[in-house]
Image (cartoon, rainbow, N blue to C red):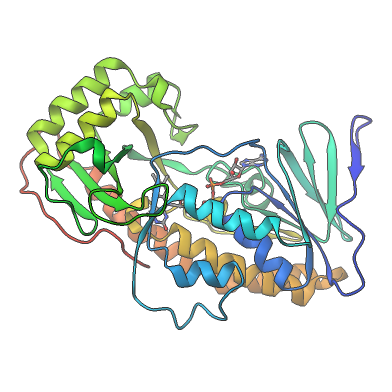
Amino acid sequence: MSTKQRSVSVGSIRRERKGTAVVVGASLSGLMTGLALSRAGIDVTILERASAFPHTGAALGGVTERMLEHITGRARTVRDETTHETCQTWSAVHARLRTAVEADPYIRLRHAATVRYVGQDVEAAWATTVDGDMFRADVVIGADGHRSVVRRSVAPHHPDATFAGYTIWLGLVDEPAIGTRHRWPRDSDIFYRGRDCLIGYPLSSPKGSFSPGSRQLGWAWYDTSRNDLLREKGCVVGEVVQHSLRAADVPETTLRELEVEASGLWPSLWRDVISDSVERRAVLGIPIAEYVPDRLVNGRLALVGDAAHVPTPMTGSGFSMSLHDAEVVAEAVAAGVRGPRMAPALERYERARLGRVRASVQSGQQFSRSFAGQAAGARNAAQPVCCRWSRRS
Ligand SMILES: Cc1cc2nc3c(=O)[nH]c(=O)nc-3n(C[C@H](O)[C@H](O)[C@H](O)COP(=O)(O)OP(=O)(O)OC[C@H]3O[C@@H](n4cnc5c(N)ncnc54)[C@H](O)[C@@H]3O)c2cc1C
């Protein structure tokens, strides 16, 4: 331990608890893993680098109410879920999970705690923050997203997710701002035009209303033509996605181009929606990353969620994969938390999940390769197709 480091207690184990875990990252996977571990009898400390969470236009398809009830502790099983699918804002899902975490006496959530590296020995694992604080526990679980620091210690030979060759532009508008001349969509729509794809989806209003005309409309525009811009802005370096393009950093010329292109590509409702987002400079650019894992664990270290596997959002499977990771890893940790049983227990988690998550990412890569790899000049060649967006895998 360097002289600057100091150990931070992750809590003495209460008599009825089985052991301790540190989870790195308090986004959807981290919160779900914390809840699943706590329910399995583990004391949990979650370390999150952010001090506040952004409100973006991001939305999640394939998240059912039943899944949320289950993970937040108000239902018994996810196996008997109905096929009802819905699209919810990322912020609403996150708030729901955070409320459950904050109410759980066996979970401590620490913000502004950026983990620099993780380590382990035969007795324990630990996460060390940039401030030099060291958190020791029986296990450390990386839920720290597609640029995971924990992955560097689990799969040092394959540490980075790679750029899939396209960007998603995201926006969110209030239906009342769009006017009444449109017929409001009942469900998500997807449109393809040559090298572009647009997904439009209704979401509840911030007050929870889902009445047509009072909701929000989200849009996600898959675009292969602006990779150079993302590279110029440092969002993609080499083959690695570094960060998103914040709304404030999207150049005025790009916004105007999107508005003009939208008028030639998309149905009138979505043209107006995009125009409204452009006028408010409320358009976010997300370069898409993908990662096919060949390991999920190393000794007392494990990965879940986007740290473990990154499918294209087109699969609509990131949330459900993360939920299943959370449950299976919690079961494994609870079974093997003491001493030398941890590594074999985590290997059982890897055996249960690796094949499935690899297959899911690979199925998305087929979409990515055909979408990003289409011949230049194909724009406008295809007729628009409209279908349900949310897909489960
Ligand atoms: C545009 C877009 C659309 C999507 N649409 C869908 C969809 O419709 N359906 C679906 O199921 N999935 C979708 N996904 C995927 C889904 O959002 C993720 O799979 C899911 O949210 C799980 O993410 P995560 O919590 O593992 O990672 P992230 O959300 O990346 O969270 C990682 C967390 O770790 C923190 N962190 C990172 N590094 C550190 C560090 N060193 N120390 C401490 N904390 C750290 C971060 O601040 C963050 O809070 C979409 C993704 C994108 C990008």
